[in-house]
Structure formats: C-alpha cells, structure tokens
Image (cartoon, rainbow, N blue to C red; front, side, top):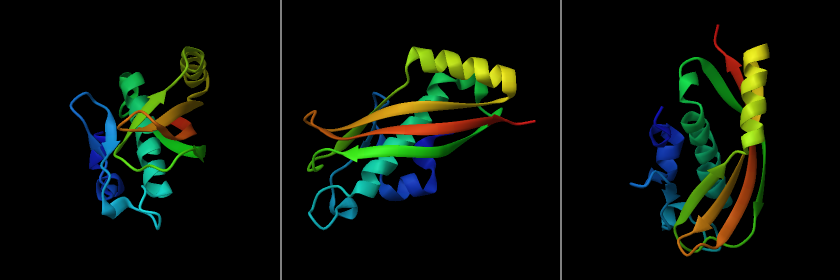
Length: 137
C-alpha cells in the first residue's frame, strides 16, 4: 500500500520525497491559530510514517495481516515553523519479539518510535505508536 495515497493522508498533504522520507510542507492549509503546523497534522505525519515503516520492515506480511493502531503517545516539543519530516524507528529487540509472537499466536503488537524534525533538524515532536497486527485467515 502506498501510504501517501490514503485519502486522509492525501488531504493533509503528506508526500514522499525521492529519498523515501515522508514530509509535510509548511503552508497555510496545515496551520493552527499560531501559524505553526497544527498538532493533528504532525500526528498524522508521525502515524503514517510508523505504518509505512511496518510495511518496509515486514514486506512479506503484505496482504497477510491487518495492522491497526492500538494507541499512541506524542509530545510536542517545539513549534513547527518550517516544513517537517518523519523519522520512524523500531528496535531490533522489538522486531524479533514481534516475529516470534506473530508466528506463535497469529497476532502481535509492536511499537514504532517517530521523531518529527523541521527542515533545519529541530525536533518538533516525538511519539510512540503501538500497533496490533492480526494474521488474516
């Protein structure tokens, strides 16, 4: 699945750069009352990047599982006053535990950490996105 083709993601304006990084341009359509990027737009970028990383990390599961975001935590650190980029990551230990649990039970959970940085490298928000993944019968 191309995550930038998801209707809501498209509506927000999230795009994929040539290097594969998801980003959101700084423009009025995503501003809040302070003329910085709205918290919900930053959340959408981070959540989308976390889901895309799952696809990248586990390509063999495409079409064989249903991933659903179970919960998340996000902290807004600095106003986003420039275009922003998402940097998701999963620990090697989490990947191994996820694979073992999915193989054993047919379902598993995994956490993806995401940093959102502006175009100058300032961290504007950080989050953890907890996914529940169920095999399709």
